[in-house]
Length: 161
Image (cartoon, rainbow, N blue to C red; front, side, top):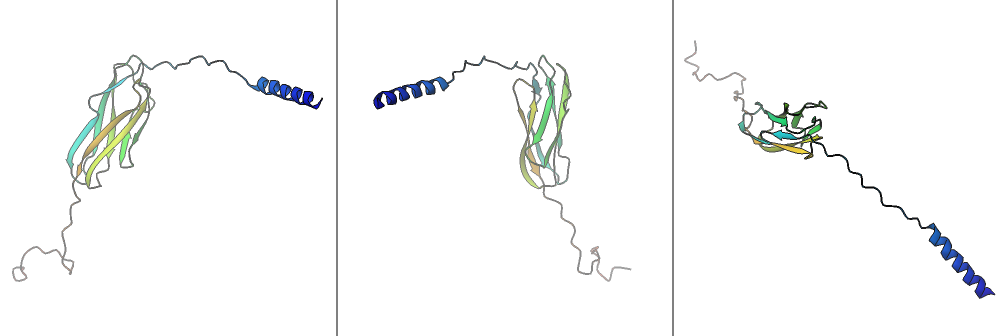
């Protein structure tokens, strides 16, 4: 009798465990519609060459919506705090319309630089990366004054009147 009860218990447990397994039907394939907006830039890299220390480090990247739907730029971020983009924020740019993204680099940092700006939009190609590069000349040095604090005009003491 014990063997029969044990066999019945195992059989019942197996049926109970098997009944707990759920099967799910495959989810229907849902694809988001692909945007028909497209941003085409005249150039996506700008080389400033040499810039004077504290000089003009601003460049405007010109682009056009070459798609069939309005283009919306949701965000633009510089690769560091020294690179600041200005862009048409959440404003629909109609097909065929042109706009600019202005990128400003802090030129109070001497030396070579290569920085990027990442543009997030509804364009069908996804994010776009713009690059600026160049060299900022060293800061100008101030004239040294003598220990007495007076500027030396080059004249000897005997030539002054």
